Image (tube, rainbow, N blue to C red; front, side):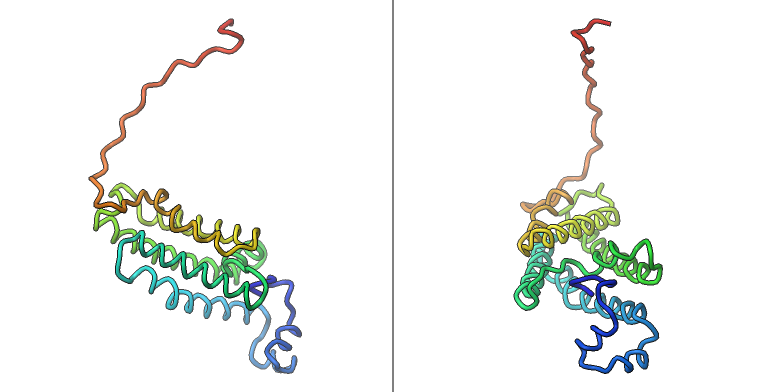
Length: 208
């Protein structure tokens, strides 16, 4: 399902992959949807505990933490490419793109994963603001959602180009996205002064 999509994989294929008789599927699961929901829950818990939390709660600045996160994502995509011959991207993003408009149950599971993911990002950004690494006029929650959205966009590029290294850009792009300071604490943000508007030239050489 991660690599090919929810609709493309049937119960018979799932059972064959698991080495189980098809009749046993419905002994454990009332439907393929129920299996997919459980899979998303378990996948999120694994991603949370094995990827995001270690990346964002370890030592170092926020820039260094995002570097670690991008490196893990690239390594995981490269492993999938070696073992399965594909670059599957983000499973949560894949499910959202395929099913968000047609399956409220699975959409809810995906939305919950992204909500908690953004919460973890926001906590790391709040810590970076307190440490002076990010300007204090940055809203942690909105910045976290922007970081998540950018990561998902790069995941799409990794799939389109069949190139796990595309996700590496997350580390550098986050620096301007979050206005990260890598050489020391930032000064308190000052209000921006409005720029003077320049008169616009009329068309047709200024003729009315």
